[in-house]
Image (cartoon, rainbow, N blue to C red; front, side, top):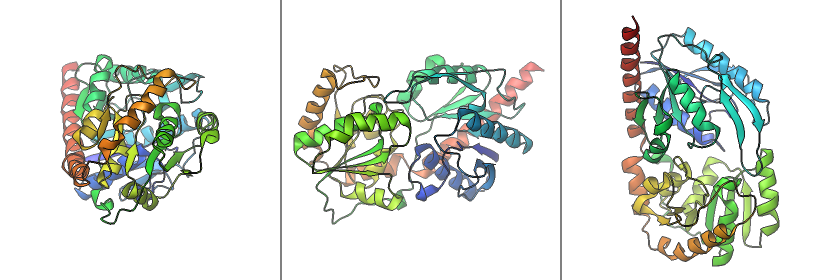
Length: 394
């Protein structure tokens, strides 16, 4: 197959050198595997990306997260036009066609929250070339409308968990959902350290309300354990969140590392007693979870969203249905305090989980092979369905 992959241009695609960027890591792994399988793969991304595919720059370098929305849209429109010119079998987009999105207002406070719609008039027509959108996002806020409009206009979609698929189903045009394909890891780059020495808890992610870094911090304080926190503090809402909920609450045993290299990240996972995913939202997947599991370190997470199926019995799932957690909170609420107490109460269960259990789950379910097999099948299905729809119109 000839496959044109359209990636975001905000962050470069760097594979194992990726300091931040879950979508970018997913794109890199899948692209590399598809090239190995003999497909003719074109990657439309920033010019400083690293790939075995044919790199087609849509910007000289990564445009960064502080760039204007219009600049990002222009780069994406260029990617679509150049991809169409290649006349591929499929276009695989990871941006929800940002070129046709219109940001009416940004309401971000302690998490990204914007009023964005998709203008069908601006959506570039790809003719008989099917477009597949991977749904890297949760079905909430403006994202629901974007997916609904895209599938109404003929774009296909692939979900990254069954929970996400179930939540998005009411908004996806019938016949446009190609199935669920789990994200993957190159398990050869992660391993269990038999000489594990860590005596700390780990939190890794974006510093924002929905990811609940402050919950993890308070759990560590309640358990009187050191915690290492690594992640992104780049956008205004992330800085505002960090300043209000993290900065002044740090104790002598707490360490904020910011962004770390891939090698440093693996070592953090390997040596942690447990990785805390103290989300306030329903994760659409949870890449941090499978990275931790691949290093044999159990994940503690709420029984919420995709984490229930990703972690399953290889970690500790904390019941939260009665707590009514809300990622839009602007203060530490009574529900959040109960959440902190409950995670701390369930913590001893994490210490009883053998390292081999989470590692084995990753090898069996979240391998690159399973991921590439799933996308190959999805692309073939999209090609067939697109051809049948065009036949019906003639």
